[in-house]
Amino acid sequence: MKVFKIDEKNIRVIYGKMLNELTLDWTIRDLGELKNQLDFALGYEDQLPSLKKAKYKNLKIHKGSNHLDIIDYHVGTLNLLTIEDHFFNK
Image (cartoon, rainbow, N blue to C red):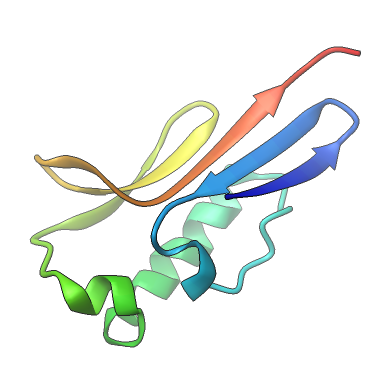
């Protein structure tokens, strides 16, 4: 698991099997931009050990209001990579 302080009121928690297989700027504020980078990275699935080990039918990146999750469409989460933004008040 990795935890990043995004700003004074936001913390990002990232976990899953693919966490150490990707080198991305996890501190990008906009989850939509981070989703675009992950979409691009999934195009290189033959270079990612977690994706080579198992054959998934239809990988997608699900974007919720405060999280991203790599899922297999119609199956659900695969515990490959989850990114959660947590907001707090001081």
